[in-house]
Image (cartoon, rainbow, N blue to C red):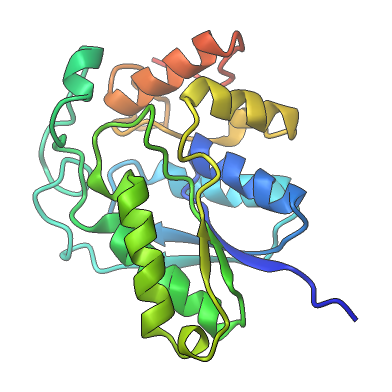
Length: 229
């Protein structure tokens, strides 16, 4: 009898993670979804994560709460202004103030613990190294290094149950990601990308994340279904 495919998928509530969730489902994986509440100012993404999972009939969804005092010096977790209306050339230079210290390392480590606990050898994450804001933990080198560590640091890994970190969006443009998601039926109206939303969750349209998202929809010749102020 064939063992059913199972995967842990990191679901932030954003466009990329919704697409990755759809890709994992299309590949036949049964999903253990995990999201993170780390005191982010754009907490509306957590509501979006719940909606996205429900829309794809993913019912095994854990929201992991992390002490908000861990992450300091980031505009996403502290009282630091989120940059607005940055030029595209500025977004591709340096590491922005919205970088959260070691965030993906921590998130993937917790996802790894969940994966080993439930007997899963596959983790999916929506990192992207093409249209991104300069985060070092979205690069191929980081993912490759984490996967090596994961197989050295776990009982499953040393006993030969190799863990794989899947990054199906790593080399895609945002437009490519949107086209792929639309082809899989992703409802992007349920997602949230904005780093600096107003009180009712409406996106600013001016932060790096909004600008990259809007540019992606334009280049994909598609309409972004969410509301902007």
